[in-house]
Length: 73
Image: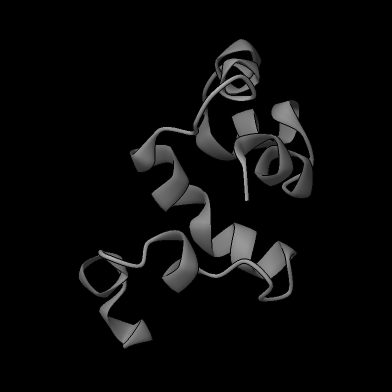
């Protein structure tokens, strides 16, 4: 799932900015590239919930999900 789809699923740049307590222009810039890793980690559980499990933390972070969320193993 690309950054545009993730931002849309989470309600758009304004909503994502509020979730992360950052500026809307910062989030808008991600639509031309990738969401920074640390921000995606913060958004991952919400993204999983909003997508009803279609996008999950194990898929987003296949190499590191066990370190970030050990309860998922």
